[in-house]
Length: 63
Length: 246
Length: 224
Image (cartoon, rainbow over all chains, first blue to last red; front, top):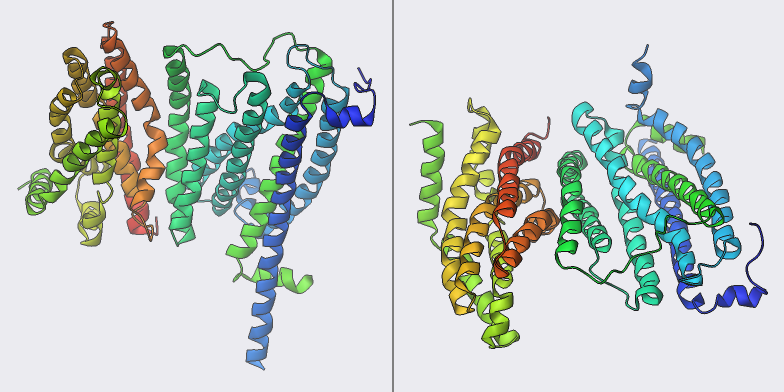
């Protein structure tokens, strides 16, 4: 059950004869998951930063 | 009180903090599960004697396709909660799920198309499952477009909620009608590998990945919800306190 | 005058004031259909085979075209707001308006379809089946396009969006209708499918106005 199915790493990457179908799907799929994570983090940071700017500007205004 | 847990969900601050903790747990657990399931499926699961190695796309395609449908159901629950109890968090959940659900649907369609090439000899056939997945993608897209076109977020949320509920009533009808339509035209008997006799060494990694993708979806939705929450609540005191603490 | 009579009278008056709204979809339908032989082939055998489906799709588009601004004028001149204060359920009034719309703007399209079928040399019995299918199916489609219009009432740039939003929900109707047409073409029993289509229309006519009224409330009230 836990036996590596390919003779070598190059055979694994080649995944004959379907490597050119299998690998792009995984690269795209996992890339999209990573991309969504990044979008969330970026949006979150942008939100916090804009609040911070708002507060700072408000304080300058008051003083 | 029994109702307290329920009211807590109405508090954006409580949700933000709680979701932050859960998000961390979900993120790492899903990363582990998907790493194990994917490496297992790609390297250690036996080769399919009919399809060869191309079947290994199943370890991404099936979990993603599952999620595409499950997320619409989750969105319908959120829509119901929003329209019945007017809970803001439910609206934010709907907004997050629409985008992430659409991405998963597109991914399911894309991976299915690439899988189709070596198995069917063509990227696309008008098969029942592909067609209803495409319609699902259009439904997600409709929600994203509708929300983007309405300026007031509260109003947009309610309108989208109505559309989600109408859609969820219609989805089974669409699914069955598309299946029936397909038998009507007697397509070539193209079937994905859904042999009932998939050996355990093939389906266990699949199960691991399905679980992993469910959790990663939860992680992504929570992350997106927290980001939207900060944006929408930027004028409230708890967000300002939050920024001060950082 | 009762509220119902007033609403119908207003619809008639609006239609009389803008006859273009009735003519334009028919015009559109005719144009699209005349493009079919031009784009494809004048071969009448092939046209007979695909003609009914073409008419069906063109009618669908024409129907969507004229429901784009379904509630817009009532919304902007405050009539919809008045409806909220009548002692009638909003869904009932919406249903009334949808019925009036179907009679004034959809029925003409259906009535003209046998003539169009003739130009594409669709066989007589298929053309009758097409006519009945449209009669049975369009109430559901009208309800859904009304819902699309109601959902996009508050959007800054509506128009095509309502169409895009509602189109996926047309799938069951389109599929069942195509089933009827295919069976009519090979001469088998169409009644069970027509009954199913009719049931879908009746269910839509009962349920969709409720969703429409909800959408109108959201877009007018804001506070509920």
